[in-house]
Length: 534
Image (cartoon, rainbow, N blue to C red):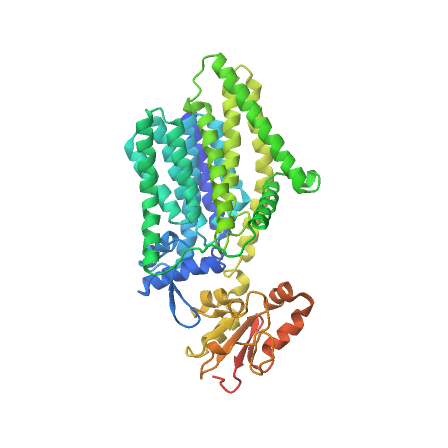
């Protein structure tokens, strides 16, 4: 079997294994939390003719504004043919996981002609725990990663073949990535930079290509944002009264801990500290720059072609550029938008993936510069083996746990919970308040005020029925039909985080004077005023 055929067969095998992994991990359905509920219910409301958005606790409709619309639009497309939206999300993830592995590996092989780099890239995507996690959930990341990485891969092929259709399709894919998650602007920034720096065309044509790509990529998102403005809706606001220095420090500390978590076998390393992690990053960057500089000197001395696509330099710079651009966009969003993005491994995933691919691409560059030292090929193989063993252990643990119990709102424990049946028996004229409003919405289709929305920013007491009860229900949402308070038992942990040792007193104050309507294994339902029981 030829080298090309064997490489592609292996990549296709990894893609199939990846699809089966997600199929196995989502047997209870993809995990769902509050953001997932917003995507799914927005799609459901669009299908029903209400528009793309959610109904609030008051019954007022709120168009989707915090998240871009493409993922909900994709779900609604399948819903038009009668598909269950959670099931549709599951199969989208299964298919996209396999396709992303296949497209990523095949593109890297076509661009670099390196079998081991293409195989390692496919395995990294297959084994990364965060990748497996997000593809096991009803979130926008799978669609975001597929469209974003596809756009960048097509730009690489455009640089090599100079076919206009590749640039057009790359623009469409990158544009859809931005329309899936606003942070996709990092893909556009990276693409423009690569077109300007590494194209072999004259500068005028480079600028034309980059400008055309940027305009076509940004057009869908610009159109969406203009529509939001016509609806007098904002996407994210600028925070007021923020100490930018403190905010940046929080971002820096959180990012450094996440970077540290990427290191395999951290249990074998000294205990984490910010200074240790920072020094390791500095040492790593100096080492990389030194090796790249040495390799460039060697290529120049031997009159080798520096920008040959097969030597890995362009791909390495491409990936490190993507990591830097995404980190910048994430930091900017955290500093200057409200609400800020969560600083968790999931939001840093594109950076981790780009970083790993960049490292192995630069190793390829080093190996192909020093062709006489054949033993160098063992370096990426040994490095990849160590990384993959560490990552695969965690990924298989996730897959096994999700297969057995599920996670989030679709977990096995929530199936046929009595509390949802009791909620559905409450008159539709009675407003609901809950500490898990998204969970109520997901299972019953009924919007509810979130308890956190009804407290002020400093968690001060809200006057209640007698004017004194702390955190009682505010009068401005009550009507002649009363209101139902749905408290899941997660309220104990939530109050503990808010009030510490006073949490029990706060909870007692919350339910004082209310009438218990139903007590189930998952929570309790109270009514206020007590005279308005159904």
